Image (tube, rainbow, N blue to C red):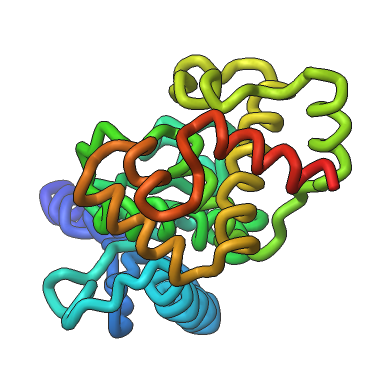
Amino acid sequence: MKRLKLLLIFLFFPLLALADNPPWQVFKSTHFLISYKCAKESQLNELACKAEEYYNKITDDLGFNRFNFWTWDNRARIYLFDTQGEYMKATGDPSWSAGQAQVNSKLIQTFITAGGFLDNVLPHEMAHIIFREMVGFNNPGIPLWLEEGVASYQEQKNFFVKADLANKIRQGNFLSLDSLNQVDAASLRAKNEVELFYAESYSLVKYLIAVFGKDRFVLFCQNLRDKRDLSRALVMTYSFSGLEDFESSWKRYILK
């Protein structure tokens, strides 16, 4: 009888472990493979619909609609964790993070209750991937501000306030374009520095698109891809004589 009890425990233990840690399942859409464990079908449908909507908008905005882009075996992957704790353990991200992307592997990770993910984080991270696929993953002509500006421009609820940035420019408390070009992720520490960096990055991209149009911005991205130099791409695409002229024109746009 004792051996029978031990055998039953041995056979039943894997079922208990499986219940505590269910296997990943995959929900498929045209351009995405969503891996999940316990998410509801309604949550998966909402995530897939939003992802497809953003995919169409971002690829159209960047003029990147090549045949079979992100389809079949080339679909992007989204991992939807059940809890914030599982997400943090898997990614190593801090508690304020609602999602992240691994651009080179076309992978986005988040968790079911992540606040602001569908409106801001998802389109932001997708824009990172699509933009880099267009201009090149190892392109030395792409500063961080441009990449973050393109990604922030796709967010549905951007909190940029033009008047706040105008005040900083008048007071001389802004980042010059030369300073922006030197910024990398490791150099951004203080909250006010991060907020200013993102505000300027977003506003520079918005300026190019609002004043000169989307088609010209697409051409700018294509020139960045081909020339791999920011200044050359700006001069070839727009009427600027160089980076200083671009900065001066942007400041006039913010201040008016």
